[in-house]
Each structure stands twice: as C-alpha cells, then as structure tokens.
Amino acid sequence: MKPNEGYKQARKLLKERFGNNFMVAEAWIKQITEGDPIRTNNPQGVRDLADDVKACVEALRAMDMLEEIDSRCRMVKLVSRLPLYIQGRWRKEAQRTVEITGKYPHIVKFTSFLETVAKELFDRCLELLNRKSVEANSSACGGLENGTSKVSLPIVTVLVRGKGQSDFVRTNALLDHGSNKTFCSVELVNQLGISGQPASLNLKTLNDGKDMLVEEVYLEVMSTVVKRKCREILCLPRVYALNDFPELRSSVATSADVYRWNHLNDVLVPHRQNVSLLIGQDVPKGLMPIEVRRGKDGEPYVIKTVLGWTINGPLGNISEDLHMASACHFVYGKSDSDISLEARVEQFWSIDTGQVLAGSVPELSVDDRRVLKVWNGSIKLKEGHYELSIPFIDECPNFPDNKSLALKRLLYLKKRLSEDTDLHKRYTKEVNKLFDKGYAECIPSTCNTEEGKLWYLPHHAVSNPNKPDKLRVVFDCAAECKNTSLNKNVSQGQDLANKLLGVLLRFRERNIALMADIEAMF
View 1: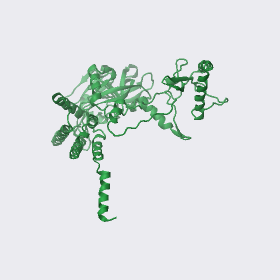
View 2: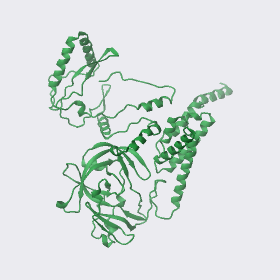
View 3: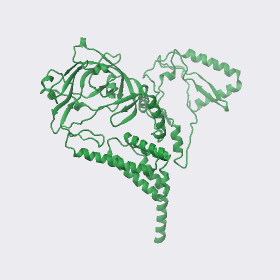
View 4: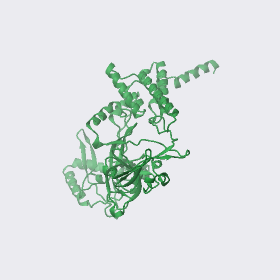
C-alpha cells in the first residue's frame, strides 16, 4: 500500500473507532453520571466533579450535542452523586427556576452552581486551616485531628443482655442527650447472639442524612457499680443496630485523667473499651440526673444516673503526640412509624427528583443478607446445573406429619382426572416432563427420613383461559398442616425484579432494548 493511501486508511479507521460523535458524547456523559457518590467530607471530590462537568459541557457544546446531557434522567443521576446537603441546595435552586421560567434548569446553570459550591468548600477549608484555635473534626474539609485538649463524654460501663436472656455482656454506653433514638453496634448484637425485626430508619446528623435498613432489637441494661441485689434493670424496647457505629474510645475518661480533680476522686471511670451502645432521649430514665458534682469553672463535672456516674467536660491538656478528634454526636432518627404526613409526602415527591429515577438497585434487608449468606456458602455446580440450599428461617426446621393432608388432596385430584379423560392425558404428559428433564425423581421405598424433616407437597392442575392449550402442574407450597406450611418456614429472599420506573427511563437511553423470559419455573 502506498504511503498516501495508508495515511488515508489510517485516518478513516481512527474516525470510525474514535471519531463517532455519539460514542464520544456517551463516553463524556458516562464519566460524570456513573461513579461513586461523593462523601460529605470530600471537598476535593466535589471540585473534581465540577471540573469534569465543565469539560463535558464544553465538549458536547463543540459537537452540538449538549441536549444529550439535558435529559431529566441523566441530570438526576448526576445530582445523586453529590452529598445530600448539596443535593438539597440544588433542588431549592431548581425549584426557584421552575417557578420563574416554568422549565427545569439547563446543564449550564448546574455547572455554574457546582463551581460556586466547590469554591465555597475550599474557601471554608482554608479558613479552618488558618485558625490557631483548637482544631475540630469538620465535615466540610475532611477532618482535622491534631487537637490539644481531651473532652470526656457521658460514658458509663453497663451490663447488657437481650430480652429473655440470663447472661450479660459488659460494654460501654454513651448517654446521649442529643439523640432522639437508642442505637447499638451490630457487633454487640452478634456478641449477644440475638436477632430482631428489620426496620427502615431515616438517620440525620448535623450535616448529613440518609435512609437505611437496620435491625430493631430489645435490650436490657443495668449498672455495674451498684450492689447486684440493688441493681435496677433498664429496658430498651427499641434499639437500632448500626453497621457504622461511631468510634468513641478516645472520649472515655481514664484514671490518669481524673486523679487531679478532688471532686472526682471516688468516681469509678469506665472500662477501657470501645462504646457499643448509645442511649438516647427515648429512654429518659437512663439519662435523668440523680446527683450532680461540679468543680471550678472549666473543670469537668460528674452526673449520677441509674446506670452509674458519668464524667463530662474537658479533662485538661494532652500530649502533643496524642491525636484527639472533636465531634458533635447529635443524632436524629426516624423509624417508619415516626414519619409524619409531611415527610411521607416529601418522600412521594422525591420519586420525581431523587435517586429512584437513576437506577433500580434494591436495598437489602437483614433477612435478605442472611439468605444471600446461605446461598453463597452452599452453591455448587452439579451435572451442569447450579444447586443451592433452601434458605430455611430456622436452620433445623421441624415439620409435622402432613402425609394425610397430601393423600386427601391426591384423592381429590384423582377423582377430577378420572372424570376428564383429556385433562388426565395432558396432566400425565406434564408430570412425565418433570421426570424427563430431571426436575423430579422417584423416592426409593427404602428411604428413611428423620422425623420432622419430611414434607409432602400437594399438586394440582392450573390452566390459563387465555392459553387453553397450556397446562401447568402447580406445587402448593402454601398448603398448611397444624398451622404451618413450607412457605412459612422458608425465607422469601431478595426481590430481584427491576423497578418499572427505572426500566422505562433506561429504555429511552439506548437505541436497542433487549427482553427475555424464563421458559419454565416451578
């Protein structure tokens, strides 16, 4: 090939592979819409996203394809990557624009908004870095942890157990006057070996908020310093177990911290261990002061509660090589039963502007996670098919003998088939298919099954009026015997169905849509 022709062919090939405007536009849009959410304490992430959005807008404008990013669905995906408090600011800005112009803001306006927010965050960080006072943990710029003073939080050592248990576990508890709910760590729940009910919780702190699925448990606590006969058990009926429980070990007072204060000499300090329980204002008896001791101005004070003495306030200077992080532990949580009508209306309208439009990733409940753990631990490939264990609610279910019920249903089916020859032939054909395809197998007459481990499944014929030629053999897993059934003993598992709203929106994003169906299921 001549050099001139080779050069032309090379340019043509490059244009086909990398010069297609649609492909280039999709690559730019994917870069800014498909990525991890930016955390509240990551101003650099906001700055980087602002730069990427600006570059994307300039590139699409040069190709005259700016309308590709202006779709509502893609804008929602883009906004959902921002921290919640920035999302709130943008929604207010968008609402004002809609009220004035009647149209949703253009991507150019969003780019300008994002650049302004990024500049504000960096200006705030510079201001905090230039301060010479005590440095504190700031969500605006990622945390500054070289403090010069230790502050004790109201933490007390307690004994905790689950409802109905006899053995206690020793841990530290924070008596938090700034929380309207009571929380514990998932590690504490696992240590106690208890389980609770799944619950939906809206958790808010001073500068962040999110919805989460948690486990609600019932706990009982009592003091470790009072004589055992005089100890009073404090009931915590609604405790929410959190995966990300705050690390508060550095806020626990030690003997070395309090020896210098005369009014603290006889006060027992908490055990040197982490905090795994946070008791909020929903348990006022646990926070109510019985006695207060105070020293001079600026000195720590102690409060006596039913759970013991708590040390509060500054404990003096600490060594320069010890890092202390100052933080506010204000926590505001709302469970499903606490959500007001106004909040529910807000949740309803958030469907139009929130993350629901962006995708269809289902949230996992506590039960869903347990089922996935069972499946992941039991999956195996057998004769070309994957085999998984049945996710029983109890690891060792105990079924009653339902053979008489199954025989009664079988006799009814036999009578029905004997009265309809055509139905008999079709039903026999479908049952034989189950054996031919390996879905069912004959049980040997010598098969011995442990008592409580056998369950008979009744079956019957079901036909669809719209498909009269098709007959299905349905196994009745809901058939009950002695107030139990197979369905009642097996976890449902995760809902894998895509949300229809997300499907319809994604249907408009590409040129070709694929659809599939399951051939058979029983």
